[in-house]
Image 1 (cartoon, helix red, strand yellow):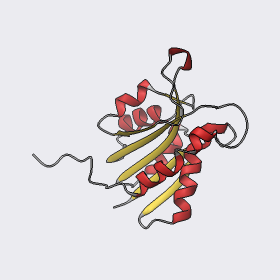
Image 2 (tube, helix red, strand yellow):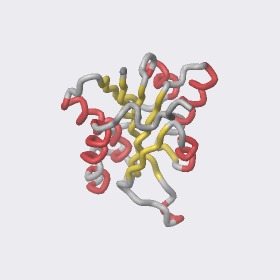
Image 3 (tube, helix red, strand yellow):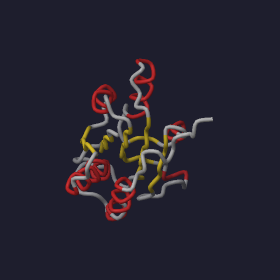
Amino acid sequence: MTVTVVGTGNEFRRDDGVGPVVAQAIQLRNPAGMDVVIENGEASTLLDTWAGSELVIIVDAVVRNPSAGTAHPGKVRRITDRSVENFGKLTSTHGLGIMEALALAAALGRQPPHLVIYTIEAQDTGYGVGLSPTVAASVPLVVSAILAEDPDRDRQSPG
């Protein structure tokens, strides 16, 4: 099975760089059967990145509205292709990105057979490098979860 891990984000916008940080940590472990790619989250490039993969795992920073009292920096969520509509309730740190890529892929018939998105709630997306301590603490958890992904876990059994 071809598995592609895509870390999306901007390393020069603090916590927005968590996707690339996770991807780099996975790349260092050199897991067999996993291709690891770092992207900026641009919709059109994501389609090319996951072409030919049976399972695509995307890691991205998201933001919540802190004034609404719903922000939990460092919180990790695992979203599958079955629950991807929930991703729309979170805001990617990119203006256009994963949701637009998924909509474009569906329109073009280029969606990955299986998709898992790990979101990590950002605390600071201002200019600068390095993750906030809260977000940095979530990186090992996400790396371990991705390395333990079972490609068959979220598939429906034939009926």
